[in-house]
Image 1 (cartoon, one colour):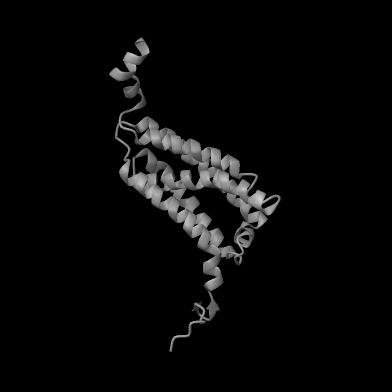
Image 2 (cartoon, rainbow, N blue to C red):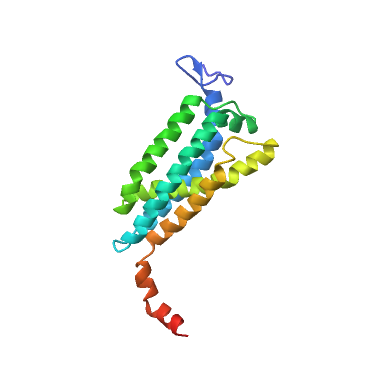
Length: 195
């Protein structure tokens, strides 16, 4: 018989609070992942854009390095507890928080050479970091305002945000038709330069 008050349990552990604690992250990062998937599938990098892909891979390396620093700051200051608590939710599992971040860091590191060779899966990972990192740069200061003081990840978040905007710009350049030199030499630009 169905009990409407029953809680979701796995191996005798009530998992409903854990699911609720990650819900905001799932929603925000899920939207970022959908946007990244659309960008990666609809905007491939033309073969001639090797120099732009190299620039994008360098930007991805910098953004990933800063995201590592950001993760350490969040880890050391209890982001997994304070973020859900700010929203009135139970704390996020420490293990889930660490594994999630380490898996994404590994994916971004693995995607650096993939960007150079125009792999769409690498572009998906890079677009995801560009979007999520830019949101981090905005979200952490807003959470600090809401909390009335320091909020875990606040110090490093502006650097991550700026690096991810730079990554976004490099990814856009890498996915534009034609190289930078070709666009500079195009008849439209030659005409503009002569005026």
